[in-house]
Length: 299
Image (cartoon, rainbow, N blue to C red; front, side, top):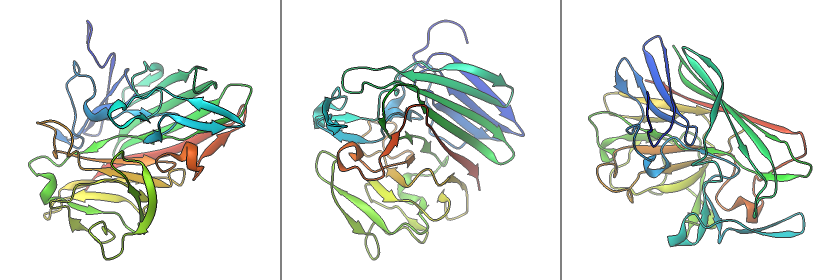
């Protein structure tokens, strides 16, 4: 693709009927299909990724209250990238340019740097390899602390799963073994945790989403997350043990035509506001590398 497009350079991957397009801005997957059938709610190359579709969330997923936190005895203030709710949202690389450090017909490896800055005086080097093949789409991530001091860290990804020809209301969601969810306030910030058993948030057995409006962090599923029709069309999303949480978002606040068209199933290493709570917060020592993987497979 030549000329300027909002999502930047495009890398097209293909193998065994699986095709994906990875983009420079945000380092995410813009489209993914199998046999021509879309598995993600994609967007046009000249769009700014709507609803952060596909973005990689470094060095934190979700939100930080008021953009403020204290680390290693120092108070920090991050930019408020969700001003309506007065939060710092989705990290510092969501709109960064990622560049390719390795390409193949079925894979691309991208790299981006979080430079030291007010609110986050640390240097991180993030690298992601996307590949497609018979098993589906796979993302392998690593982030290294390239600075001289310990750095607080979390990671998340933001794919919107999509079943063509079906509405979110009619889809079945399966979160096997997920026992708890995070309770949030009107600013989408955590105020506690509660069990899902016997509630409208219990998807341990596949269940129709119906009118449920989800923007909810759940404890890590015991197996693959599945989104499907009653006929069995759909996909699974797996994540390795690096991811201890998953956010499920039914996109109710997005404008048409994306409202409730897809379901964001977001692997996360930590819950919202972990920079303040410390829950599952990773502290990367100088030179230390974090690694995690997830992927999507059609049913």
